[in-house]
Length: 86
Image 1 (cartoon, one colour):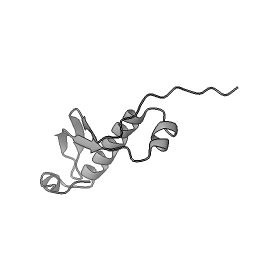
Image 2 (cartoon, helix red, strand yellow):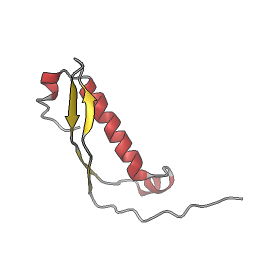
Image 3 (cartoon, one colour):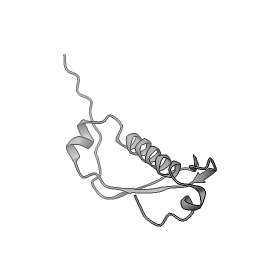
């Protein structure tokens, strides 16, 4: 028996997600609180609909993990002067 889950509609326009404050550590072990804002757009509808169960949760977790990994590689002085976007 195959059970199909009904998927909700996915908006293909650019979207904004405002993250709550997060604690991250720098390379020199300094604790920072970062508030992030993410702009994203779905570019592959088939993957977004059928290859992941909770799209927004996955986007949030991937972004938080990536942000922590980037800050974790920087010292405090470097992290306070980030001028590029990832």
